[in-house]
Image 1 (cartoon, rainbow, N blue to C red):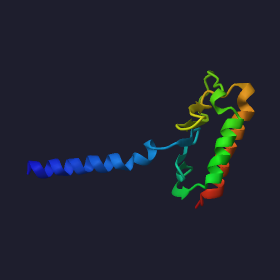
Image 2: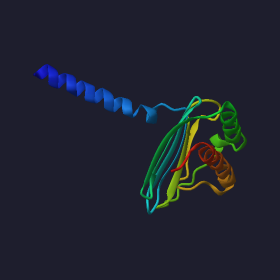
Image 3: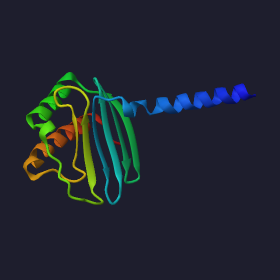
Length: 145
């Protein structure tokens, strides 16, 4: 009986760990979360595979899709041209705001930035250009319900 319980426990642990794999193994991530009526939007990219999820305003949506090499190159160029690594975050306190976070784990633009405390004025247009590039990928590839 102890073996059966131990085996069931091991299976449950393995299944639960594997279900979170998509959220930990990525090259690039874009996420928006928070606000008065909280939303959670994520775009995770690993190679040419992308996972999109949205939850908020009473809706839930998940979708996997392929990103073309051209779109990846365009995104990488946008990150480079807008000096992603040099964008400076402000440290003022902002509450109940929808915050956007971008993490790049590979390549020359490797870094992590968020506008949770705002972006310094000199870099706001750079940040907007970068977030617009991610939003364009979402708009072009995600079939919303």
